[in-house]
Image 1 (cartoon, rainbow, N blue to C red):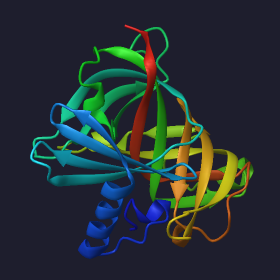
Image 2 (cartoon, rainbow, N blue to C red):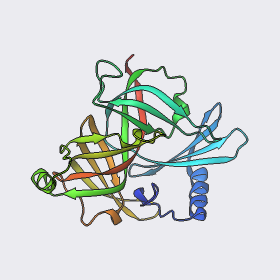
Image 3 (cartoon, rainbow, N blue to C red):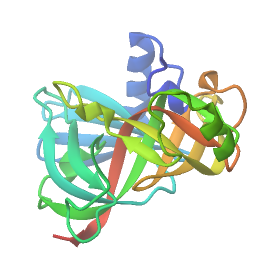
Length: 246
């Protein structure tokens, strides 16, 4: 399984690699103050984002990747999970596709938020537009919907646009999901810092469109519009603008 940094073109495979990337983020990024310290936002380019975390004593305590793309999903945010550690992590429980009320969506989901404490005063429950990125852990690609349906065996068959909140099934909730959807747009992205490439696809599934990012080692060929992708993904989202409805 690749790590989340590799999914956006950063070949982080050791603790030293991680520390070097954290140092570069601290030097290059924009510092966003919060009562607990500050986030360090490095807009790397091509949609690639890194979010560093610095505590009140000036210690670098965390680093998270994100990918900013075209996804805009109506999310009914119902509650949040704050990190019990010294870092500035956090996640939201939500209902994807919510419209008339925060809990009237298509399915529940948990997603990480890279600037979680920036929204500390946000009222919950409420509905917000969220830009959602799905980082591939494993993935299958089918040429089209007919190929996808033809590949289904005798077991449980999922619709070509479906989402299973797999991270909510265990003893401890995790920001993961099993997504099946149609590729609307596909791009090969080059990380401007490392020159490493990866795939970005806008994928339509139940509840809305996700920005999916996939490292090349998980693919046999470049994605094409009309392909069906299915796999397991880490979910990270950025809240956009004001609430739609309380």
